[in-house]
Amino acid sequence: MLAQLGYVAFCADIYGKGIRPQTREEAGAQAGKFKKDRALLRARVNAGLQALRQQPLVDRKRIAAVGYCFGGTAVLELARSGADLNGVVSFHGGLDALNPDDGKKIKCKVLVLHGADDPTISPQDLTAFENQMRTGGVDWQLVKFGGAVHGCSQWYAGNDNFKGVAYNERADQRSWEYMKVFFAEIFK
Image (cartoon, rainbow, N blue to C red; front, side, top):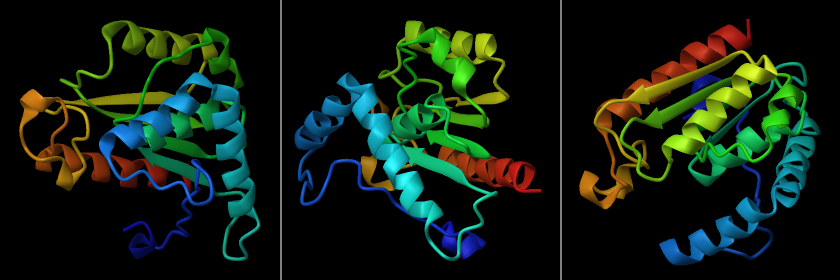
């Protein structure tokens, strides 16, 4: 979908060669390794960024990172690492801000698209994220979609909000439009 909009799309393999979780539990275990070791996560996502920069079609002055769920967490960590980007977009990613001072390292604009009823994000993590952005002086946006839970842009997530993960067509479509507007702003 990004390529159809005219962008070069590149997907970094954070887990590593040959590691392909087959179940939600396996995926959670893999993601958990990186959530516990943010230095490793930042190293992997920065390696992906460097690989992207080497691609001949890439304009190195116009780069954004986009991630869904664990990928949303990863792009926020990329920004917190001080990476030179125009912006990051996190779709229902983890918002925990483990080191409040990391906001001061962010050099790019931040767009977070979030289900307002997402049970995976605690009120404390949401507050810590907002405080990190404010104290870091970051140009950031947090958009909450009413009636949406975690995974709201993932069509395969089912439609039962009581499970805590469910597709929400309005949130999916609206979040994509927000990202397009954000891109128009950061890639002037």
